[in-house]
Length: 244
Ligand code: NAP
Image (tube, rainbow, N blue to C red; front, side, top):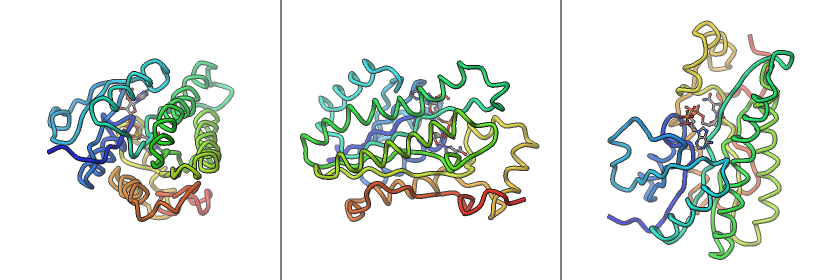
């Protein structure tokens, strides 16, 4: 069945983005799932109400092609969720310049390119909702100069866009997850992950669905007066960083 509302979710082949694409689909959206690589899950790819489009969010030409095909196939973009992101952790003295550039490029510039392309379409329509996935790490995490700076940039971008786009009926907010169980965190050495879990106020790791629930809340037209905010989904970790 064709759904009238359309969302675009980046980094949707796995992890948090995958959960968001599924959740918004069950909320009644047609989910356009975007990723640099195809999802492994064939059921997801062929699910009713989900369309996968391959796109590198750092490539402006690919981003333009993506929105052209979304508009020609589905007519509009009601919700954009910028979730694609990478980590390349290291203390600054060991961090290759390339790892700084790559993280800023995907997490910050990719989000900016997607916002730029979608905001033009939403402005024309006079409505829209943009949700950027930041991270609690923007407040500071040793070993993440690149990542924290990229996510601080995402928070700043979100706040500025809420000022620029509010008059056109577009709400722009960020969701800042804490430690979430995804392929990204599963790449960490087991002992590091265990330490991180013990440093959480809840002593728990969150689930992608916890983040998807907050996105679903912000995508709901009844919360459209929330604009320029950061919602933490982190078990309280943002309250203090010195839990041991
Ligand atoms: P993930 O499991 O690694 O999934 C991220 C997805 O984004 C992957 O499918 C990845 O593709 C894709 N991607 C990477 N570069 C891309 C690009 N240039 N264009 C399009 N897609 C691209 O990560 P996650 O843990 O779900 O994280 C999702 C978001 O939440 C990220 O922005 C992350 O920073 C943020 N976050 C995560 C946590 C956490 O604890 N997991 C905490 C705070 C914030 P490939 O892997 O195939 O390259």
